[in-house]
Length: 207
Image 1: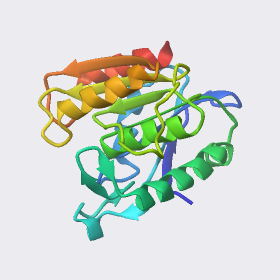
Image 2 (image 1 turned 135 degrees about the vertical axis):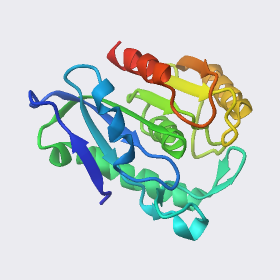
Image 3 (image 1 turned 90 degrees about the vertical axis):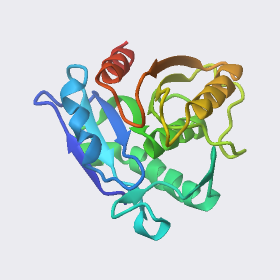
Image 4 (image 1 turned 120 degrees about the vertical axis):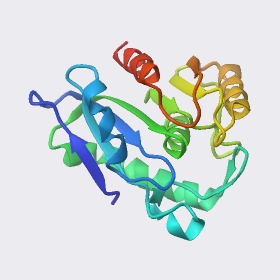
């Protein structure tokens, strides 16, 4: 089972809207809890931890969702393992929260954004995605055909040295070609989340 942190509003009860946020490469489950003050009113936040230790792949002392290869390609076995673990985690979300969730959205930063996109594309597109500086994996196991029912917020820094903006443009175009309802926002930043990006993403989430 994936380790996780959670935060629930005082009014939490069955039907709680919940945002699942996935950390980036080499980070941990507590990282994106920093965004909880920015959640729309009444939302809960749960932040699972990647199942792969980052150290063997040179990612530092934290955790990872997959082993990166190059550009928009990743190691398939490590990705599949994480997607499988994440699927079980979402199925058991009510147990993890202590209340039954209502509306669910998923998102993440960097690797977490990449995996969030992959998860929603693999699971029927019904879960909206907040992708902060991730990329769209180029693999047949992440299908992008006929995704007109998928809602995505994709924020990316035009100065990003880690996941170049060109990869964002490539991934966004593939999603648009598949018919996704994509809100693409660009920021004059590198590989981090800007305050105005948080504002834009939460407006998308509450819409």
